[in-house]
Length: 354
Image (tube, rainbow, N blue to C red; front, side, top):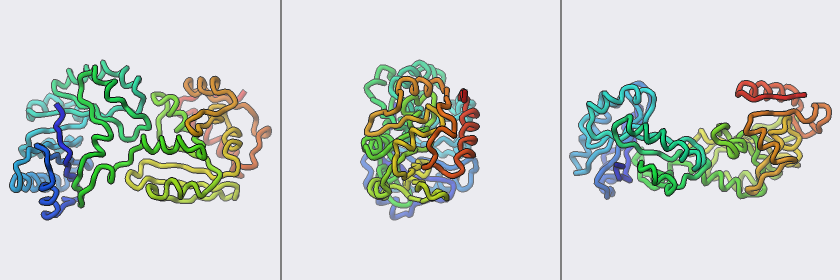
């Protein structure tokens, strides 16, 4: 049972984020049976109670909408006034006390964010989600991960008989958060961003993002590392959607840019501008980093071996430092490589330096 609403009002601990006139205009444009109030923030209560009560009273005063309250904050559950439906995103506190929540609130729906992995990996988890729904004794909604580079095919999940909400569903909604927004104004679609980067053969994708692309269950996506040979590409492709900060190599050998997404600052691109991107990548410290994705194709000296080592988390030093061309790297490359080796070891990699 998914509450079918495309209209959402954000409330958080900082304040109301709406005016009466904007609220009236937003409500006037709503065409659904339900309107959703999304409550976010942290574990502190702040002004939640006053804000929620005030907002719910106004909605009931001006309209006949049913109200769906959506939150992942356990402390909010003690403050909730009368609403028609409650959607709770699962976390450890919620799971621990779900029986108490079910007893206090009859119309409860639980939701869970899917991991950022491929379709087959989600299908492999179907028994877990079915058991989770049975355990909770309430309907469960699967939320597509809006930070995933992989697109989930809704049809492949139909056999699970569990409701699924896609990124497009979320981005197609309307939100009141100070002003009125469409979801596309508020959220970055990471899947579309990845496709844009992956399709452009001027961009060389390497590092952690490439490892995640190959084996998302094993390797987490943090930032997207890219090498290019023309600084003009950055403004052409990313100026509109990213804040761009330059962090020059003090040795003057390369240009290094950090790009932060304007809609979601957690989404970052690290871009290195160098004369020969392929040579830069293939001169990396370990074999598992001497591979890149360009124009949706993988390139390396030995794709099969390197991909196998990435899957098994085995990094091998192919050439000693003195045998590699370090002319395009940072002048403190030795220190950087020592730090990188320690980073791999902390992540559980087996490092073979012969």
